[in-house]
Structures are given as C-alpha cells and as structure tokens.
Image (cartoon, rainbow, N blue to C red; front, side, top):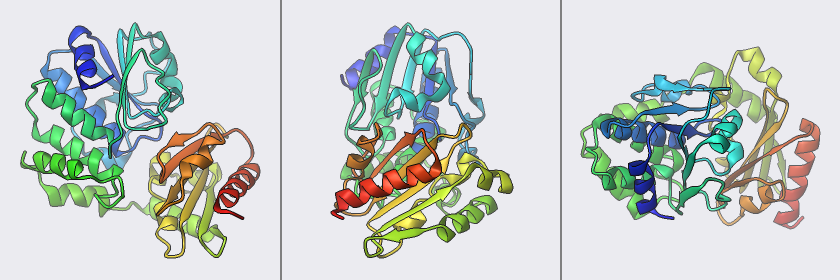
Length: 318
C-alpha cells in the first residue's frame, strides 16, 4: 500500500477513530493530533483514543485534551492505527480495530505484520513524516498547531534529530514545519529541557539498580509497580529513562524492564552502533527497529531479567 491508498481510505470513509499506541510517545500523539486537525478541516467526524492518558509532557499540543480511552464502546466505522507496530500496541482498544467496518494502519516499523484491512508501512524516521506527506497530499492547509504536533513527532523519535534514523528528508520536513512560524525555542524547552521531579527520582532508581555486563557494554535495570506507586508516578514519567543507561560511555546495549499495572513486564532495548536489538525482541514476539525495540513478557521480573540478559549476552557473543 501507499500514500495514495491512505488518502483514498480517508476520502471514501467517515466516522474515524485514530488510535495511538500504549505508552504513548511524541510520534504517535503528534501524528494523531495533526491528522485529527486535518480531518476536522475536511469536515470528517473523528475521535482520538489511547489506552493511557496523554503524558503531561505532551499536554501543550492542541487538542491533546480530546484524547480519550473509549474502553468498552461500540466499534467505529473507520479506524486508523497510527504508529502501532502490531495490534497489541493498541491495548484494550484492540476490539475496536477488529470490529471496525474498515481499518487502516499508518506506521514506520519494519516489523509491522499488516494486521489491518489496508495499511501504509514505510521505512522512515517517524510516522510523523508520513502524516506530513498525507496531509499535504490531502490538500489541507498546514496550521501552526499541526506543525508543532508533527515537529514533536519528528524530533522525539529522532532524539532531537540526533539518532541514526534521521535523514535529509527528516530535516526537509522539519524546515517546512518551522516555516509555519511556531516558537521553536519554547517547543524545544517543553520537549527536551523540562524534567519533572517524579521522573528525576525514577532516574535515580534506574541508575541505582543498574547492572553492567560484558566489560560494561551491556547495561540493564528494572522498575517495579511499587516504585511508581511510592512516588505517585505514572507510565508517562518512565519515558526516556533508558537513555540514561545508553548514554554511559562504555554501554553499547541498554535495557530497562518495567512492571506494568497488570503485572506484565515491558522490555525496552536500545543500542548505539551495530548491535541489532530487534533480533533480541524477535525471540519474544517483540518488534521495533534495529537500534530501538521492545517486547512484553508474561513472567516475574526476575525471570524476565534472566531471559533478556541471557539473550543479549548470547547475541553479543558471550
């Protein structure tokens, strides 16, 4: 499928539900919010849903307060999953995907298994790049708020344009967005220069529990539900914690395991150079990218630590 298929899906359907993935990040939310505003301009009926609330970090984005969970409601006519690498990433909204009359997925994860009726899967830095091209192809006027949302998508998924997935096209789109006149220093401050107290405390826990292996090239740590409860922290406060391990000079592979409210263990893996973390999570039905991937394990934290540690060290040659 292609950009043309995405535009056609929008043109011939109505009553849309845009779904952002669980543990929502800047790409899924920025992409959803930009497309939401574009569909409003096209006089389409549309809502946005996510299993979890919008993290405070992204609450400054226009229409972020309209993101709801919609658990247990009747299916929509048309569902678009945005940046959801597989159907499990839709969380408890999965029945709405399966029950929709028409479903589409717009995503940039190469492991996407094509779980909707139609899709547009493309290898690029962020799903926000695809949404930008779609909005442009729809002939919709790009507003300042849409530009901020898409800039959020691009900048967060590329580590503020520092990761290896950043391409000339990423910068070209960012330049077009900046032409809309939004306050770049203020957006940058909100996204990258503001850290809440609870997240700062979680960083301390992560680093205190850090274990290093293979000449300090593999770092792994863990967070329990009780840690978040003690601080009255949320899943949103956990975003980006893994970066503090990956940024250690000796570390090539970083991993954080986090116990969810349901007791499942969410595993996040990152690498700097040549190590393919996608090969690790593939062993556990996970997905993502070569240098950023994840999976979910239904076991104890201790078992999850041993499983991931063993697989990473095995693939590192130990």
